[in-house]
Image (tube, rainbow, N blue to C red):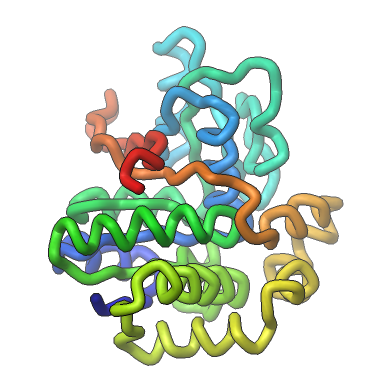
Amino acid sequence: MKIFVASGRRGAQIGAEQGLVTVVVDALRASATLTSLLEFGASEVMVVEHVSQALAEKETRPGVLVAGERGSVKFEGCDLGNSPLAATIPELPAPVVLSTSNCSRCCVEACGAPRLFVGSTVNATALARAVGAAAVELETDVLLVPAGAAEDEGKFNMEDHLACGAILHRLGQACPSARVANDAARAAQALFLRVGEKGLPEAFTRTDHGRSLVALGLERDVRWAARLDVYQAVPVLREARQLADGGSGAVFGEGREAL
């Protein structure tokens, strides 16, 4: 089993085009938010690219909650924002529509992959087991997709690569035959091993995006999203659902049964 890393929307497209088990990784904070929503009972989480799509779903589907952000803050009409700490609210279980600045576009682009997951440090061990099992079942390789910076997908994103390194490390433990297969994967692995598990929270707060979130008063979110294995939920794509505007949403459910 080979493991590759390729960033942003193009990375997501590669996963679909080449038939790879694909994992979208948006460490601050969408991966942790989506995982926590399923951990605490959301019946499904549909990821959509545009705010207008999320609000249209809320208007037409009774009981739907909207989570997300633009510029790292809740947009108007949003119920939960993009915080892994918001999912314990009493309204769950409920279906949730999630729209964020960059994770959403990667999830939608990767819908053609034979198996699509979302994850980060927060569910690294459970995710690695499910991803490894899927790759063995489908007899294919694995692609980790760092979602990248909202304003520039080509910009190196430290926290996403640290999270990819943590997932790579757990994949190596779960699947001894797993091998890193490109320079981006090797760099992510080396970065995680250099920082270490205990160093992740401090490292996340020092990244470009981490510092901007801390400045907005969201340091608790940053440090929570940097923790390892606080959740067992494994978001896995259930379907690509047609939307009223002609676009599509990526519908994720709980994937622990794949273990």
